[in-house]
Amino acid sequence: QVQLVESGGGLVQAGGPLRLSCAASGSIFIISAMGWHRQAPGKQRELVATISSAGSTNYADSVKGRFTISRDNAKKTVYLQMNSLKPEDTAVYYCNALLAKTRWDALYNYWGQGTQVTVSS
Image (tube, rainbow, N blue to C red; front, side, top):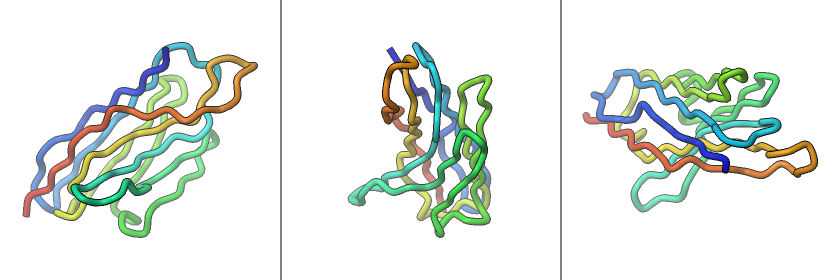
């Protein structure tokens, strides 16, 4: 069974930093891309950032220059360093990983359970 477990969410004042972590565990043969998405109340889930297995990154325009995504392949963990947080960054943050459980499996997208980030003004 594959699990993605996020941690690091919480309440922070505007302008402050927060770091999210997401660790993958279980029967995993290979992890391709990993990423972070978020969903604010009443809004659709949106992409925040992605990172490939080689380390190439992609960011939503709204977080460029403030957020940094990174990963530790040995630990099967993806991170999201969030700086200069704004109230509009308030949302539930979900990590995802595109992975295969065995060498014979196709890549499949797995999601974490989400972690709440609240930015107060």
